[in-house]
Length: 466
Image (cartoon, rainbow, N blue to C red):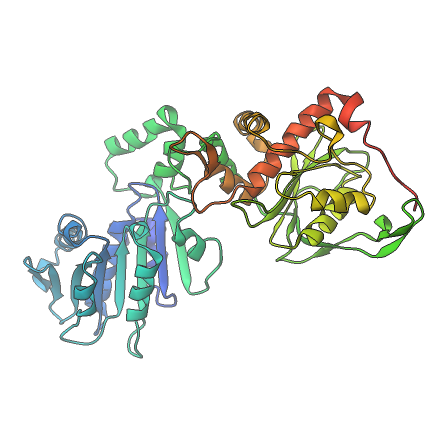
């Protein structure tokens, strides 16, 4: 039967999704009080009434939480719409049955054996609603996904959740890559016209009392609540502002004979940027004639599997380019060589803790400007003394100049760079710090070069000869 529920019964932001049947996954996420769970129920009630064979499994991490949340919400929506005569309820095992035979069953993932035995008197499982999906493990979601099969009615999974951790599998699965079978909608309390005004004022108050909490919990931005070493509100806000790079790709080059070196080396005039969406180099500002740049590099050492480099405009402080990828050391050194030449023979400072190969390879190739540390040693050595210094400098940059930062991967790493229970500032378990450390080195060397123009910067020797 077709039901005539007036459009005023729904929040306008959700109406386009009401009868969507072209996507397997409906991903409804956002801030607290956005009405996403209510719409999930409203939509399923409409499907139960309109579709001849529609059977719904509602899932939460723990079965006991259904009675006062999802089950109660079904009863509330049905009663509010005056449809109680069309439904029956089984309080004991939490079931909702429509007069046409369609049924809703509520289960928890704390008892997977009971989940396996879910069957319906008429038809097969057609819909799954996963409430508080962020509480599930990806393996649990995969098992649910596999249960939704068959050639009958269109199968659909609805996920509702508030995003918190940028490391969550939901982010990697539905946000960091595009799945054409998924329809994603973000809403906040501002999209819920039925929300209690007093509750709205409570949420709004966090804007002043706890800006980062407001950004994550109220506005539904990805983040790590209360843990980041850096100014999390600034990083999260900037993450919502920046677009993608102007260009992405890698460098190509040719070998030539260097008269000064007396051997084959990369010919600077042959260096060219080749566009490619999977390339390790992301360009946010093209090199400008006459501008000076600094590059900080972090090698794939302990606890890391990426090589990274950050290019910073020495005068403006802008993050203008990043290099990040899994590659061999020689390929990293050559891309770094090209990157430095492309940005006007930038001053390159590569971390030297775990391997000196990139430094030596840049030297062998005749790169003209490398940072030298105390005692004239090439590269930047991160020690118990220098690490807090460069991180403190980056903390100041994120706090005072978040508009300098343009790379989304870097901003996400800033949010997951935390202070551990032991007091050490480091990447959260499962996260990376390659971009953070490379950027910290770049800004430190920038500050040194700005303060000591007669030192590291002007004493970098140009070794021409082509």
